[in-house]
Image (cartoon, rainbow, N blue to C red; front, side, top):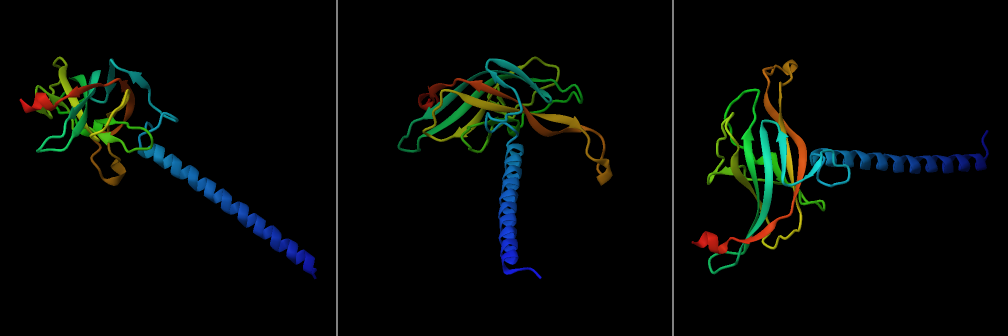
Length: 212
């Protein structure tokens, strides 16, 4: 028969084991959450643990069906007036070429393929797509020379930065899982991070330009 001291020692040991088990479970849960955050942000939200190359403009990047020659960035500001609040936008310029060797079809650039990476734990900002020749979602023809284009990101009216980072995603030409009854013909899908491009933006007063 166990003595009272043995019973007390067993209870203390059991509590210590449960306490440490709880700490380990919390630690494992934190690691899982961190991994999910890195995965959800494409591996580029923070420089620590970034899984894609960080490049400096001007630079050429191939991603999926597109080739980007990224050249410059502007922070375009619009002053407050009687009829509107102050506004700002980040505009990034590039030459865009359709390099779709798989389907050889014309297409327009999707906004989700270019993202602004603010850093500091902030969410990624999708662009509005590609604007070329003054037309948003301009269709770029396969096999033709690059088109001069830009993309725009919404930023706060007081936004300022000496260096901005733009994430470039590329779609993959692959099939769906035929085991689930899907068509197994490959197509462009599943955009994934390919590079981050750093640019030093200039500040442009867009008020007078757009009021003309």
